[in-house]
Length: 297
Image 1: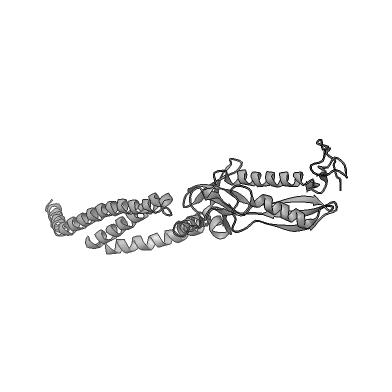
Image 2 (image 1 turned 120 degrees about the horizontal axis):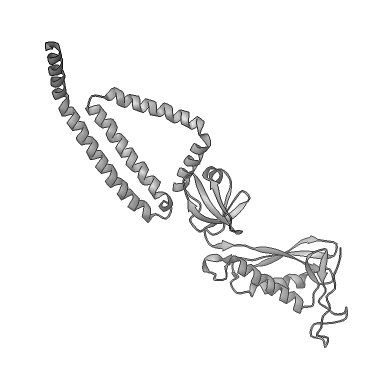
């Protein structure tokens, strides 16, 4: 019995000697936890002001909070006299990180790529981008993946590593886009006149930029038609019609110009429309009812 009492007394004395360090460690830990919460909220408010960091502000806030809290735990363990435990935690954490890195290499690669994209991102929300064979509008940006909505209303979640690794096309970073389309015109029509006609029709379309100026090239000589390719520029940030609407407007204006000039044209070499009713008819003649004639290759 006396041995038990002496043991309890010795343990109590040891606890009293350890109590100050325990109290200091707990107080330091509480201070670090409070500071971590405050700094995390402050960092979140700072991230929220940045358009680039706003989509991942929650994750970044947690990283800041966990980092400060982890530092507080290690310092508290050191004050309490558990420096060996703190060192073991660091070593064990490193080993676990290596093991998990090999086991979940693709997941870790996506998170790391997403972290780098957070600070050097070549796109923002609502940007029209192309990565690989996928083209769509960015709806959300996460560390592991990027949510892209395609033109056919399909939601695709692209891994961040793919976007970070492959070439990426951003069509709306500065708002400028250069659409193009091809039209075939018969050999009977002078190429100089066709080029001038298409360039004037494109240049006069509302919303087409004067600089860089539109231009037309002779793309190919097919069996029945000369293929002309029309290039023009538009600014999507200052255009109410949008990309598709503007492309349609330019194509329709070019169609009207070719029709009014009485030219034979087609988008394919296998079929063409001869606007003239007869080979001798001219624009503005008395015959007002043109007859369509298919042209086969």
